[in-house]
Length: 282
Image (cartoon, rainbow, N blue to C red; front, top):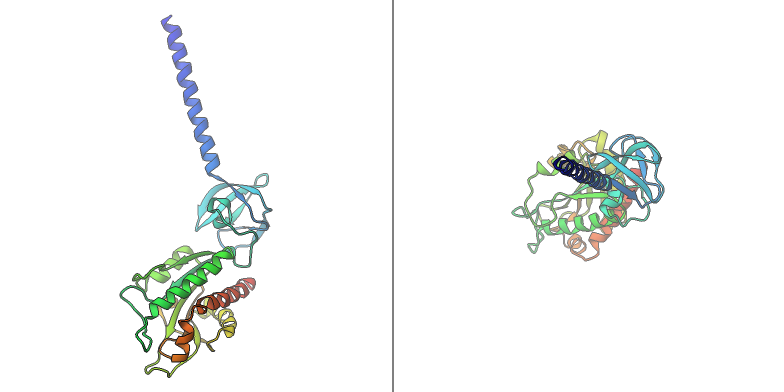
């Protein structure tokens, strides 16, 4: 009788153990499974836009996540096929995007210049540059995210961020583009006007500067074109990087536009168009 009780006790423990293992496997499998609810999402050879496209998903494709790297997922799909897909384009990120765009796979770092104790340049009435760079950055980020891009802001509030920390974010993420927003200032008020797009590394960033500068032609402040600029935030960047001076804050006419409610959205539209052209050529 004692032997029989021991036998059934062992059976019960074994069944409980098997149940726990099965539950663990189910949870693990569920956690590592995602659904791509967007048509034509690219599958690539590696974790980034620079890698060749090997396939594309159909809407509703189920993928099993094998591993993660730089916000990309290495997945198994469609009867043991493997490849890399942008993590933000699967349902684990609850994307609302219905179709992909030229920049859906891009990781873009947006840098609102200055912030916190660093006010930046001042308008003739003491308005601070940092306020308007953040306003523009938020509008650009919203537009790019609506197109499916993975957007990271170096600051999302009025806080101080060191210069070196800004390119470091882009380098760590292996971003596809870095854009720093600023407003220019002349030694005396009303002596300067216009938008300038600066690059530092010709081999990586000149193409991005040209694409963005081409589309700011549509903005109400005239474009002064592109120029070489020795600024730390683009000099220390290992990814395509530009710094955009979106007008002169101490020029009366420019500041009227800069401080308007519609200018941030106008910039967002121009930047989106420029990036679309840039990534289409990659």
